[in-house]
Image (tube, rainbow, N blue to C red; front, side, top):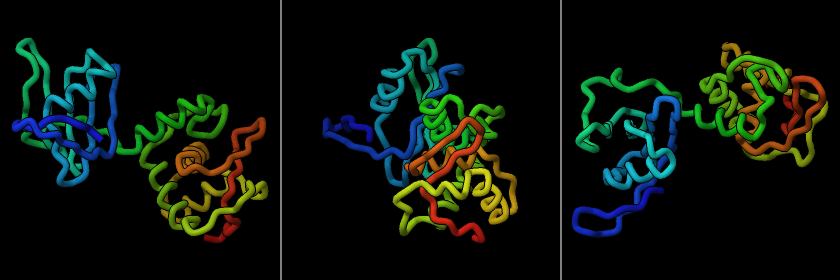
Amino acid sequence: MIKGLSENGWNVMCNISQIVIDVDSRMGHLYLPELNVPDMTSVINCFTNVDPECNIINTYVNGVPDVMYVKDDDGWHVEYPDEASDYPEIHEYQIVVENIQEKHPRLTQFGFGGQGDIRPEAVQKCVEWLLRHDATERRKTVNTKVSSYTWKHIVERHFDSYIANGEFICAALYLGYKMKTSDGPNAWFNIRDRTKQ
């Protein structure tokens, strides 16, 4: 949530869906739910308090590009992109992947200790599948009979799309599943054993 002041001096609060800061490009991305419009100063402060060198802030409402805040020699000003292509494409689950990998630095696309970049769009598919498959009741204990490698194949069949082992692991960790690991790349979670789904 972003807090600020309106032009009339009223306190204004705005819900946010997600904040992404790319420290390499000094660019920020602010994702907002519909009907939530923060004031410019609060948005800028939100990002520059984290990265004082941030000089571009892209905003999105319901995933659709909205205004762009740009800093130049004259200070900050607002730009209205003519096309969505003016915005760099960042998947909404990118921040999820980054947060999980920060907590589990050995996690890669192919599992623990492997290699490759985890694809946010694949993590999103795994999250969607887990919410449908396991939303009502989770096991209390970790299911050591079915590994992440087996689960990822089940998700692949459901979507008819390639899913990597690490991408499934990332999704399960994001949803707060209990996890056990070994010396290998796989993981085990407290997911109900309904492997034919």
